[in-house]
Length: 310
Image (cartoon, rainbow, N blue to C red):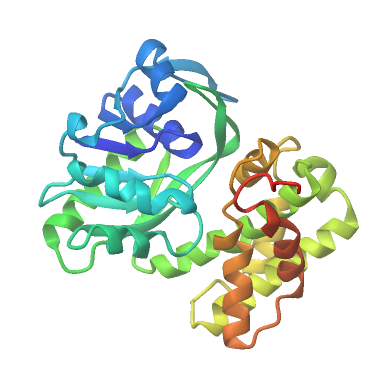
């Protein structure tokens, strides 16, 4: 199976490296210093399960990489339109795109840029970031993806099922779902809280979630997101708020959301697609989201990168 990664950052680099290590044919669309380092030295992944380097085909020109069976989109939300345009040569008539972007809107954006392509919504569970060009560092034990079951096309269903099995053989979880909307909102409920808090406080999970006042805010953020999702008619587990609060309390002490790494280096943020999306949908549906609104307001000036002082 030929798998293309757009692009091999924290999430894409982590899962791409595991697939390549297991013997899959993996190609990655990259650029700049990260591209140069992977070409010269390979892609290094480092974390609790070891430190190793894998070789994969990499280029900044999708036409050089050729047509893939599966294209994994793992870029930031604010990069997805441009990424989909440059990824177009990776697609043939039977290629499946799987969006592992944060938030809710990634699959819709990819479809708008690449009409006629089969795009499956999905989400990734891993805490990973680029530590240096050609080097991805991950923390914790989360290591799985969830993505939609193709609805009408039996060939596409077979290919998606086959890909999930290849993922499991590569050493990470892979699950198909008939309700991808629920899966996307389920992740957003926890991610939006953790991303907003670690980014606004500039602190990792340990000092944050050991503070009872922060935990109270965390519970409120989870409750607001859950209320917005249910107002949209999204089916969620009855105990989702308790599950997410317990999961966040159990995060490794040094863990940050990826958005913290972006704000720490003065880069753009995905906050519009996380807390911003929840606030906008809450206003549209008449669901109060005061805690998300406050944190969104704090982080919004950074959404385009480090604000210019005048």
